[in-house]
Structures are given as C-alpha cells and as structure tokens.
Length: 323
Image (cartoon, rainbow, N blue to C red; front, side, top):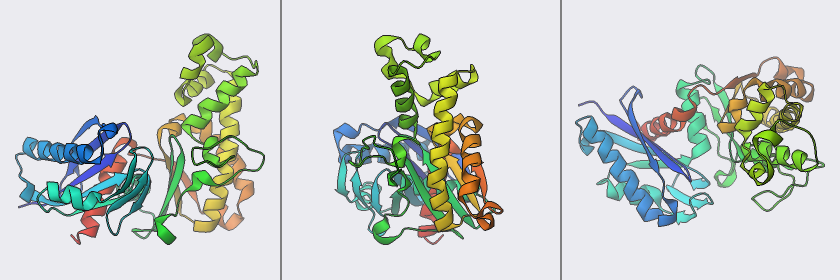
C-alpha cells in the first residue's frame, strides 16, 4: 500500500489540511474556520475530522497514513511537539503532537512554526528548490523568517531563530504587538503598510484612497488597496510602498549577512504587492550588503503561497518519520 501524508497549516482564522502521496504530490485539500475561541481541544478535534474527511474522499483509512505534519503560529518546541505560546490561537503549552496523535489512533504527529513549514515547502517544491541554503520571509500580519541549510532547519537556542519582525529600526516608534516600539514588522507587513497609509491620510496628504474610503471607512484600508492605488498612479501609495521596501531592505541586509542564503523567498499576503514593493527593496538592499553576498544571493517571490505550508508540513513529517 502507498503511504500517504497529511499537511496542516493552521492560522488564527482558517485551517487548511491537505492529503499528499508518497512523492508529496498534493491530492486534495480542505479549508475550514479555525474556531480558536472554542479552545485547543475543539481545534484539534476539528483537524482530526478534516483528516478523516480527506481520507474518506480518497477511499483510504488511517492505516494509509505515515505521519501528520502541522505548521502552527507562534513559538513551538518541535522536539516535544508542544505549542509553547501562540497569540493568534491563544494557546499556551498545548501538547499538540500527543493530543492529535491520540485522536488519530497513534499516528505520528510532528509540529513546527508555520513560517518554518512555509519555507520548508518552498524549499522542497517551490521557489527555493534546487538551492542548498534557503531563507524564507513571510510578510503578513507581521514578518518572520526561517532558514534551511541543505534540508535542515536552523532553530537557534530555544527554537527562537527567525523573529526578524522584532529587529528595532532607528527613528521608528510605532508600538508593536510584542510590546516593543519601532519593530521592523510595524512597517514591513500588511498591517504596517495599511497603518502608514492611514497616518498619511490623517495628516492631509491627498490620495485616491480618500475617495475610496471616506470618513470612518478609512480604517478598512488594506495592503491590497495600497497596491490598487499604486496602479492608479497614486503618489501616496507609491511613497508608502517605497518606504516599506527600503525598511524591509534593512532587515534583509542583517539577515543575509548573518545567514548567507543562496536564495531569499518572499511570501505572505503583503508579498502580493510584487515588484511595487520588491523593486525599491532591491535598490535599497544592494548598497547595504558586501559584494560577495550581493553577487550570489537571488531574491524571488514564493511560488506556492497558499499550498506551501501544507506541502512543507507534510514533507517535514515524512522526514521526521524517517520515511
């Protein structure tokens, strides 16, 4: 019988669960609201039911599964399979691997941070395939990074490596969700892009966004709206994305110098801005890194995006299971 694997990408809003074959080809997937407010037990039972649903759709039983992998937001102990702290899920010290494994009748379950699993997926089958040293950056509500060296994830002490979003920037003072001020992710993130645009509008800077989001509707502005305004030739939108790109370059300069990747893969919702954001970032980055880095590093947009976390989690589980 062919061994199959499950990859789970869990977020504060939705869970995406995918069934993959032995070659890690995605056969089918399902997506459901997380319902995090109902507690960890509810969420893990939901995931177990989603897995059973996928198996039934393929005419398979649980005996066909080799392992389950899951990418969780927040701080993870991948050795013990514990979600140490997840603000998005409001989990503290949840033994995810043990609990979900028990619900699945003893199938091995392996978990890790969602950005690491996203990067693992892009390294295995996306924009990072073929490279030995892959750095992944996700620009979403915040910004985080992960590093893979020849197929092995780099964790650092306490599994804390990669929190690039909390590098402080000189001259910046916006309050970050972590409690510090001036963190990179207060600028280089989807929420940061929208915040900066709203602040410029509040100061009276003219923009087409005023027509699209009058009065109280201004709070509805998203990063995607900034890109849309940019395409309309809006000066404020261009200024915002150039400012964000230049500051993202500062964070990448530190990370590239420390980790020396062959390729930097950039994904997440804010990365949908594409070259509107990456062009000013590249321009600002090159003078900030030495020629030996400049001449070898490749910067690419993620290829898999929605599927990267699912594929990465399944590939991680397969590797951890020794298959």
